[in-house]
Amino acid sequence: MRRYGKHTDEDDIRSRPNRKGNRPRTNIRPKHEDAVEGMVLTVDRGRLTCLVDDRVVMAMKARELGRKAAVVGDRVGIVGDLSGEKDTLARIVRIEERKSVLRRTADDDDPYERVVVANADQLAIVTALADPEPRPRLIDRCIVAAYDGGLTPLLVLTKSDLASPDELLEKYGALGVPHIVTTHDEFVDGVAAERVHEHLKGRTTVFVGHSGVGKTTLVNALVPKERRRSTGLVNAVTGRGRHTTTSALALPLADKEGGWVIDTPGVRSFGLHHVDPSRVILAFPDLVPGTEGCPRACSHDEPDCALDQWVADGHADPARLYSLRRLLATRERREGD
Image (spheres, rainbow, N blue to C red):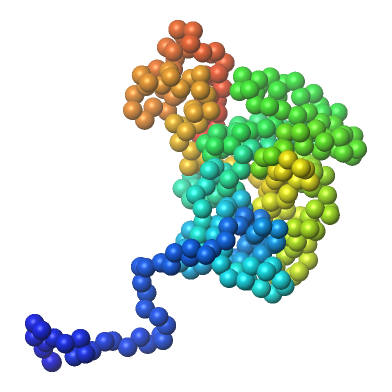
């Protein structure tokens, strides 16, 4: 075997040939300073539909991003063919910092969290008052996910002609969550969409709800067909438009003040394995000062929690503390409990 001395010339060293014929791996990543910013509108089988200026561009994630995935609502850096013409494909090379994240897990025992939407301002929780029956536990979980992710919750109650909203509204009164109550006739006449629209101007709003509550019907009323066609949102494989919601989809509001609505697939469960109680309580600014005397890693629902004394001393409404603890307790209970 040949041995090399201390002062070996570079040319004397044998290099192992690359049998795969591709370039060697490197930790140096290109900066892509020429990347143009765009917004992800939907994700379909590895293809991401993005809006760049006023053009809809189909793109794929660059390998250099590794496991980091872009989701609907993400602001991304894109390079390549940005013409938006048929059969062109650009490349997403950078995902910008997110200002908010709506996340969920499959259930409370699943440690793998899924980012549903990024950079939204508001979470509209659509719930029917009857047919199907409301599921308060699911509403609680959605509210917790909104507080945890930095979104403002909005309750949209449908079918009030079939059942009274009073009991449900009383349940969430202490939380101060804004709400809209609609009837079936208002859905048909378009009045419901007009009333909801007032809460959406200039904001990015995610719509969630389980099947049958009227969520997608409402989104369709808010975003006319002409607006959908102008955004060019079709299936990248078949070339046909989607009818049912199978993935999150961002649609622009036809309003001079701007705004986006994001429709999501109907949910059966909303796991909260990822939720940190210290983030949820930030949505209760009247209770936050009372946590200064809490023990380390306090769950805010234990005997030594300082919030009990804080409320007993008259610094906050007891109903607010009860509401906080009810929301935090949803992580330990299933939606059907």
